[in-house]
Amino acid sequence: MAEVINMPRLSDTMEEGTVATWLKKVGDKVEEGDILAEIETDKATMEFESFHEGVLLHIGVQEGETTKVDELLAIIGDKGEDISGLLNGSASNGEEKEETKNTVTSSGVEKSQEEPQSNSGSVSEVEIPDGVTVVTMPRLSDTMEEGTVATWLKKAGDVVEEGDILAEIETDKATMEFESFQSGTLLHVGLNEGESAKVDALLAIIGPKGTDVSNIAKNFKVAGSTSETAKEETPKVEAKKEDTKQVSKASSSPSISTSSSNGRIFVSPLAKKLAEEKGIDFSQVSGTGDHGRIIKKDIENFTPRSASPASAGTANIKFVPSGQEDFDEVPNSNMRKAIAKNLAKSKFTAPHYYLNVEFDMENAIAFRKQYNSIPDTKISYNDMIVKACALALKQHPQVNSQWFDDRMKLNNHIHIGVAVAVPDGLLVPVVRFANEQSLTQIGTAVKEYAGKARNKKLGLDEM
Image (cartoon, rainbow, N blue to C red; front, side, top):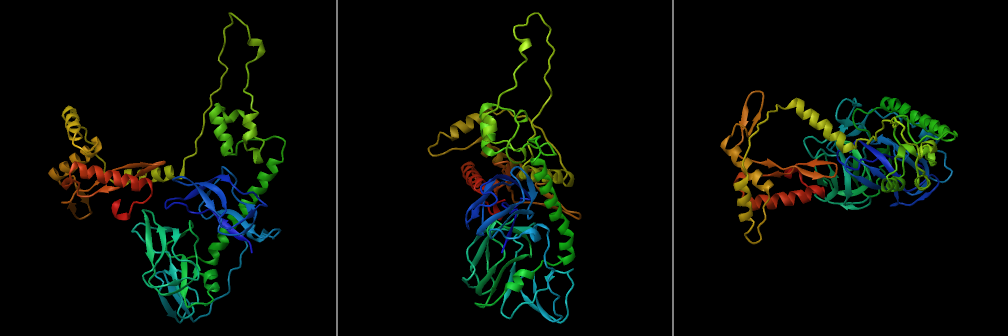
């Protein structure tokens, strides 16, 4: 049976992904664990592996194109299998449910209902056999709306004891361990590693060994999602198919363009690297790859536009510049978009004020030099500034305050956030009780947090 592969959520803040490179093409055999594609997220370009075996029957997003998380990425199935129904977005609406049934709440606790509940609450109506518990995506932070399964510590068929760690889940702030509150056998895994879902969506099913839970896995819906919603989403898939047809027609035309309708130029990673090494402008290259994509041989065979022979050897002639204005467009990464969105929100929701003070740092420079002369001691100017800010906040508690509608909270403790640069953005670990720490302690803490930030190992209590 064909499997629809959607754009995965490869980071906790990822909202859309760009296919950098396909490692498989339509018709190729795919084994479980094979790398399907390289996908650019809001934080990095990551390899995306297949969790299914079969033949790659359809590619929904071409190289260089971007799509939202959970949109159609590819379809894998048996060779020659008819997938027109999947491309058309057709799906069964499911059978009507009986009036008396068991329902599962978002916390995974069974509840008996005499009458069907409406979809307006936090409960999804699915008939649950005795002893079976549906485990839903937990809310592991106060701002978490979605979670991504980073690693499964248990697999389908394993025995699970209460308190066992089921999985590591990436929230909007950190990767956290999620333990089971039930005992039994892990009957079904609702999300593969690297996949994401909203809070309260199906994560796993635990129950007595051998219990058939296929109906639950197939029909479980997050509260509020109805067949009408599914119908409304159908045109999106149909539109995608129409777009694909249009692209196919365009590619068969003798006139080949290297740009999409929005001006984006499609270039293979290898061609891009060669072009950068040779200093070649993509806008001057005609692509011969699929849909006008620039590939390696286009760069190798490229001949720069030369000046007119008539101009050679000409003297005493007034030349008029004949160049044209041009520019290179660099699409915003998803992380940059997220940063822009959050900074704009901060600007309009928090009062801002600015203080400017000039300092003569001569004594500070001499102090640091003397301090670092102590064996096994190394502090930075940044460590000194963190300490100075902490002492200033202690002296001026009104600055170290929080505003509420009916009161101000003057904090007696002093924590300092230190921005750490990570690829394409910033994370802000917190040095706690900075005023009570020595310079060497602050320096050690900052180095440790910086390493964790770059390796994505910061915990919620460290940010």
